[in-house]
Length: 300
Length: 291
Image 1 (cartoon, chains in turn green, yellow):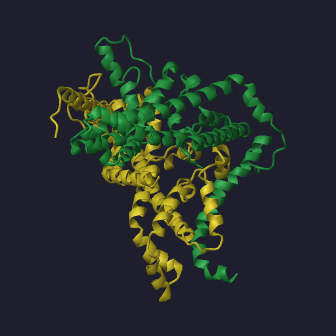
Image 2 (cartoon, chains in turn yellow, green):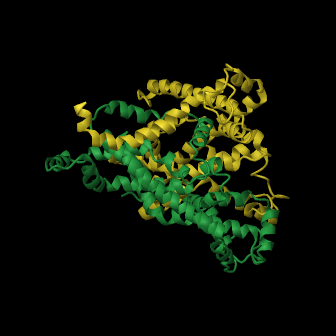
Image 3 (tube, one colour):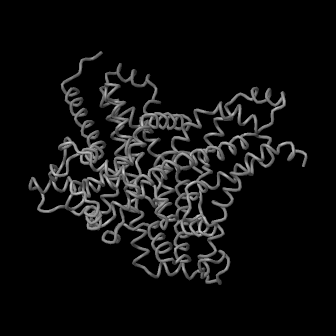
């Protein structure tokens, strides 16, 4: 008790953050109850009557829904993750060979820019280039006779996955390559000097020194990000999903948004959210075990 | 120094060309939007632009006089500035508190905060909570739920732990309490880390729009620039066309208005971008060296 009084000021400093976290991070967990009940808006989370796993099984009973959502989420997020790392890997290797330091710095500054833009801005920029009729790239291609009419890249469900993966690579290239370049700069200079004495050229140095050194970074990044593969972030898919491309574009978060917020089917949407969280945690633990075995490093 | 072989010279050339292409792919989309927004709509032909076609700032003139845009810019600035300051105050205070190993329940507090990085209640329970608390259709919803950022808290705590304890001890000796120590010693000593996380928070607040869609959908007065831009992009071109005619703006096309709003929304981030990029890169470097 005396300690509490002595530390009253310190506790006072922690108190606001403690209360805010309690309310905004822990109280919503009690909201999971509504997935097992028939919740009506305006009442407390615990007011609905018990419905068991009804909402969970109905997600899988609408088999088309569940299958498409899981397929879209996994396909786009895994392809984006792997594609983003692969592109940055190659880019960093080539960046290392740029000899002019000022050019190197400028390239880094420019490639990092899209990372700090909101998804609305990225959408606006992409729209102005790729919209069917007025998009500059489409207009350019039509004008020069490459295609007969503009490709409906933002609306046709055939292009959804390719669009998302390419936009993600574009957005994340600068971020990933900063991490790769940092790991390259940690490679001891002696290794390269020794290789030079042995007569190795730049290609050999890249193959036998740089690439093996970067592999562990690749693995760590791959593992760290794979736990969040179902949490696609609402922002990005919110701007790119529309009624015409929904069959191939809709991911877990958008589905939850559509059923919960738009259709006000709160209990059902929460149940889908819980399924998503449980599968995410399972993937996280699985990857963590795999990571321990491969790199003797735990991510949790 | 070995002389470059013809093969290497070819590679260097190829590499330079490739880098140039990458830079163009990264930057051109933004440049196109900028060029389009300042072009004269009557002179722009469909297709790519290498340079503005006839300078014309009428889109900007119209937008900067439009009360909706001005209000949105005000909301954007307000949420970014207030949101950043509020986050720093609450998060840094807690970071200082839990940096003290002898604080009562310090281990509990640390786990309590850290755990929230691994799970969340999800979109719907959070939405219902915010609604129940009466935070919907209010400016506060931009600020209050974002005042604690656990990732930033850990960064700040790590930094504070590096401050020599002797300073603090001597202040306590002459009778200062921890609030004063926090205010007059910890905050000034932590400016580098506070500046870095403050900058990122500012950008995140500036870029946010999904909370507007979720919570303030019904309150157009509280729309920030990002959300106004979003609505503009999604609007049927007919309604834009109509609005244009009612405003008697024959010289402006919907597309030039869209590009101009986009540029206006990018400018603040663009202005702080050099500093932002530097802080971010050094932060990432420190992080990866520590690994």
